[in-house]
Length: 156
Image (cartoon, rainbow, N blue to C red; front, side, top):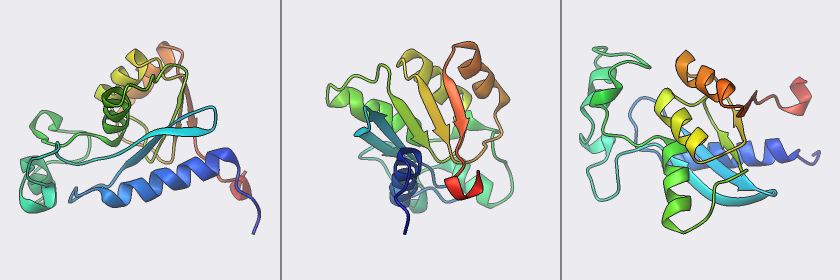
């Protein structure tokens, strides 16, 4: 088995992180890295000490399951924190700077997470797949945050 690249290594960690998600419709994971060292992780779900999505804690998850709303829409009714958001918040909670870090995430960030990434001075985002939010992607580009779509070396 060939040795994984750093991007492959950390992206695999992001995918492991998403296994903690309780979201009913889309599990996401994120890993925040500085100098090839993990400083924080996150996954999507309701805030700590609140009812999980799979326990009825998020009306939007229920609506997505019923086909009432769709990806990228009705986000103001979502009780969940996103994986990127949780990785940034966990770093802050533990007093770890996010400046000049790389964020590995299973999907391109939404607008809200993109704004947090920019203000947290994260310098690079590596995304495993696309999320339907062009504004988030545009803001990252405008702010000079490098956004790379992950490609395993065997696919390059």
